[in-house]
Each structure stands twice: as C-alpha cells, then as structure tokens.
Image (tube, rainbow, N blue to C red):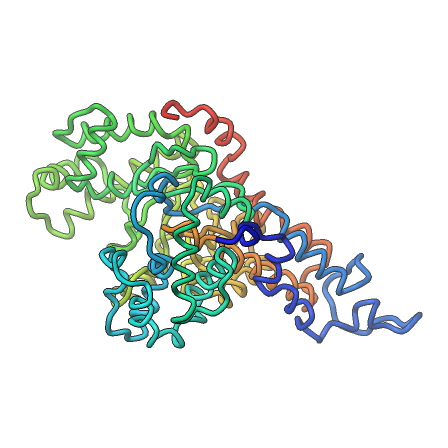
Length: 487
C-alpha cells in the first residue's frame, strides 16, 4: 500500500461523503432568508420558524460540515473480532463484499452466491470478480455497496473496481494487515472514539480501551448446549435446574457487568418481542426439558424464554446497563416475515410499560416501521433509539428518519452511528455515509426553516457522541477499561 493512502484528512473525508457538492445544491426555497441573497436594507420575505445568527448560508454549511467531520464519533454497535485474530490467515479482497453486501448480490438473482463462502479465500482474485461482475451494476449503489466502495477508495486508493484493478486491490488489501490496523482505520481514517462490540458473548478483548464489550444474553434465553457449556466454564458453576441457571447468570453479570457498556439480544430474528413476565415456577419444567434436549412445544419454549428475558433485564438494571434489542429488518435473504416484524413497535411499547426503570435501546430504527419508533421515543421516557446498521440499509430513509426524529422526539434519546460490521474495513465507509446523512438532515432542516443554524450546530456533538456518553456512562467505562482484570 502506498504511504500516501494510509491517512485521510478531514477535508478529504468530507469530499468522500459528498458534503462539498451537497452544500451547493441543498434547497432553494429559503435562500432569500440569507443575507448574501438580500439587497442592502431589504428584509427577507420568506416563511421560517427560526432565526439565525450566521449571516452567510455558505458559511453555515462550511461550519456544519467541518464540525461533523472533526467531532469524534462513538460507534455503539459492531461485531468485530480482536485485531490479532484478523491478522491471522490468508486474506481475500472478497471479504470486503462479504458481510451484508453479499445479501444484495444474492437478492439481485446472482446465480453463484457461493463466492462469499470462506473456502473462496484460496480462489484466484480475478476469478472471484468475474463471478460477481454480472450483478455489479445492480448492487453497487445500494448502501451496502457504497460503504464497500468508499472503504476501498479511502483505504486502498482504488476508485473504479473492475477486472483490471482487482489484482491491485488484492495486493494492497494483503499489505494492510499489519499491527495497528484497527487504530488506523477506526481512529485515523474514520475518527471513531470507541466501538461497542457484540461478540456473541462478552469477549475478554485484548483491546479493551478501543473495543468496549456488550453482554449478549441471547444464549441465556435460548439455553443451547454450547451456550450452557460456555457459561458454566466462565462461572465455575454446574447447572441442573432453573435455579442453578439463575446463579450462573448472576455470577456472569458480577464478573462482566461493571465492564460492559450494555446488554443485547437479537432473538427477534426467531420470535416476537412479546415477552410476558413469567414466574419461575411456570418456567421450571420447560427449562428442564430444554436442558435435557427433550422436545418442547412453541408454548413451552416461549415460557422459559420469556422468564429468562426478564431475569436478564433485571440483572442489567442492577448494573445500570441499557438493554439493546434488535428490531425490524433481518440480515440475509428470503427469511424475513413482515407479519412478525410489523408487530415489533406495539410490543416495544409493552416492554417500556412493563419495566419503566429499564433504559431500552431500540436498534436499527425498527426499519421499515421507523415512524412508529419515533412515536415510541416521543411517548416513553425510557425509550432510546439507535440508527446502527440503518444508514447502509436505507441511507435516504435514515436521513429522513433523523429529520423527523429531531423535530418530533427529544434529541437526547437518539444515537446516530453503529457500523454493525464483522470486518473493520467497511466501518469506515459506513461512518462516512452516516456523517453525510447527519449533515444532510441538519442542513435540510435549516433550509426548510424548522431548525436554526445555531441549533443545528449545537446538535452535532450530542448526536455523534454526547448522547452515547450519557446513555452508556462511557466516562465510567473508559476508566474501568484501563485496568480490566484479564488485560
């Protein structure tokens, strides 16, 4: 990799996510309100709900894009492994298309979606491209596609991906795998302060000050053999009944709760969010059957999962940990039942009512049922919202979601970025799409007269990092991360 590709200036970053071009094209209806468009002594005759202290519209846009680019961003959701694990083994450029982007290739009708399988790491780089190229035109402009293309341009200096440039991409991709990879991408290129990582369980990471960890409690709910064995190993317990499982979960939270930033469940992929508060005596028999791998009815499964959901939520409350829940859209293809997803918003309101002390964090804007989530955040004091993943699912829709949220619900209840990636490289592209979306949303609200210039500038810091600092108590977590017992 060329040395001049290793760092990206803030202004270059702005160019990447389109702010310089956007600044000259956003809106025309309210331009008369700006001093630069007025004749001396003439009062602007235009409808506006706000007043501004910045005399130049161009000056405001420049100040806004500069502030967005220079504000370090908290990344509140990733699936990253530790850097040392990423540096091991053979590397293939196709990994940059693998997570999420591969779904768009499959949805387009690509006949050979197997190109994304792990054995393809040994395949010829150009041959991999030839198998993907028939679908390239159809998918390259999706959010997933744009995130990959931005990352490739910024990290490897390649603008046009084609058969001729793939060998160079492969070469530079391999060259990038040196110690410090995560720091270079996350902090130098993407200006990300820290990441909150869901590792499927709590990982005793070797990078505790960069990769903060969530406690994923799906395994505590589902009680699969692997999850039970792992929990027993980490807690030194034995599990023969529900009471034993309670003890194991308590010990797990005692061990990791102080260091975790949140707890998280994505069980919405396989069931509704209609969690009833089931007492232990009703959950005991189905839990025992699950432990002994006996067949259960759907009703029995729901009983023990509901009970354990609330048991874990109670543990989260004791350690003052927000509860992150997957809502809305599914990863993958041909597997998403909208009949179940459409019930998510109503079920979220029930959760807010059943545990008013819990700090709920509803993920992914509940896409495509996003307007309902705004109503929930406006109505319920304990409901918070993440736009993690959403910027690459539907970039324009998420920009509009943020606009509507800011003039509808309290602005301290939303956090605007989580890359949600397994590979660190594409976090950069996603982060730039998110910054561009925040700029577009705020600039348009000002242009339309709903928010003043001063108020727009004031919103940048809380949206990118301040709200996350408060919701996740990050100053406290940062201090603890310096001296984790496993470091």
